[in-house]
Image 1 (tube, rainbow, N blue to C red):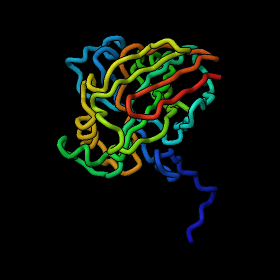
Image 2 (image 1 turned 120 degrees about the horizontal axis):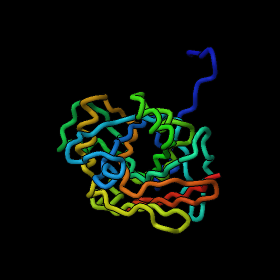
Image 3 (image 1 turned 135 degrees about the vertical axis):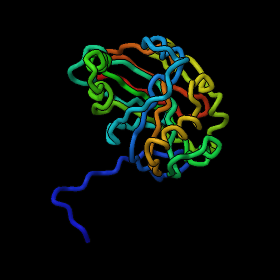
Length: 235
């Protein structure tokens, strides 16, 4: 029996609809500027930019309770005055591989969830403007709240599902997964040329236009049609 010199880290487990079992999180990949409207509001040309990726730590996940009327209290992070929400469809990988063909990508998907890519926008832009990696804007504690995983076979027509985010009951983001610049299958195929994907990986697929800042006390609700919605309150 192998022992460790310090206590081993816990595996982050996400609840799966219809079972008491958990989905074990390995790596968390995120796709940048994958909706044309969001690319434009970030100052980029979506017609010229190939997909790019960044990562969050696996333990950046904050599990949002699935029961009705349950709200996760999400701590406002330090060293920022401009915290932004980004509502996204999250893809949970169930079968690994490298150099996956687009036509085979769907077979690697275990399921889907709704997640928020919380972003310290001021820190992200500060690093971007001096040509440094902007990990501190994206990869902080609790930066990836995520809800119940729905198995792929139970998620319906996810490629055409509506996606929406409300802040205090006011709609801020409203689009459809069909508006992704790079589809889910194309994203998996492209990502698998850069990294060998493995069961337990998550892919935040990108956010629509309409991102904006939140403050303590705001309640955010994210929805993707066919999936369990998530609600968080900034504290």
